[in-house]
Length: 497
View 1: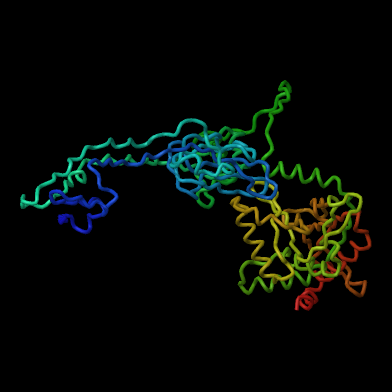
View 2: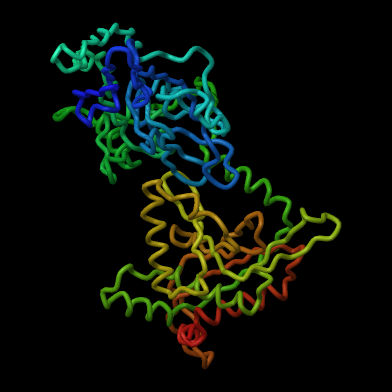
């Protein structure tokens, strides 16, 4: 008869079951598959893979971007989705985030460098095997995997002592292996403090390079410490100013007849590069110009009255013009269409678009940008004004997103906000018309009786249209609708109801 004696608690039965056979019997060893006189314990080795994170297409058709600033430096530890750098595309400023948690091993470009889509931005050492990485998204550097921890050598365990039935003692399991010194865990990679670069747009950085000024020497007054153009100009003026008590001298260099002409190369900024491409494509569009003047006296009075109520944001003439154009597009939808000459070059066709996504040309420290107000037909004038205000704030900080520039169907350029009466706007490729607004001026005009002269607020309005599909009469009639709505704002209210 076989006798089974266990001195192991149930919590440890998964480690080992020791069977005590009686003399002449067979040991029952079916309780545990781990029964052995020798057992080896190992800690798994951890591998590191070195990856290159590339610049991907961060917008519609983006081919390159300029690095504005790095948020990390070599040796810094980054977390997945943590920001790596800020880049300026031809349309917007974008933060590039990390796809992995790891340590930055190498930055391939300095700040202000222009990077092509597909080029590696930096190398990150991440924990894991190379086969676990999505090779379509990351480039795994060649070379052996890095071993971070050593394997724990096999340890000899004492063999179980088999005692006779008469021994009077219970079988005991030597658990000393649980108290063996474990291999110390690998030290955590410490993240060195990363110097936070001052913020500035490419245009400001170009000004800094021109005057050989380090951006760290200037205290930015913009949001989040961004260095503005005015900050640079003030710094230059203070640097050129003479010490107190000294006579003021001219800061402009004295002209000389013996000086030779010099030409210093300067690459285009991403926004200027996009403007070059867009305007070059626009040359293939046969433009025609239509201009007229609009009497906005009543609209000016209405705008003033609304602004005096303390509403926010303050209303300019632009949101009224945007809404008037949208209302005109319902009557002349061809101006909102797109000319498709790529599907079948032999048979061009119009793509009629249902939504009025109106772009507004906007001057920013980084250059000319054209954010798009989506679905203007469904917006109130206040909603349009709020979008303009949002664009203006983000544009000054260079934080407009690529989504803010997509989907435009027609464009308005308000050159009058800066100055000028007449503008000949250039059509954006993919659109059929663009409107330009001049400066609102107080001028004398004849009253309805044709005798009396009275003061009026007049604004010049100019249109450019694609003469391949839009004729002059259609453009003039659509412009007349916009003119009437701006001159009689109550009619605009009725049209909106």
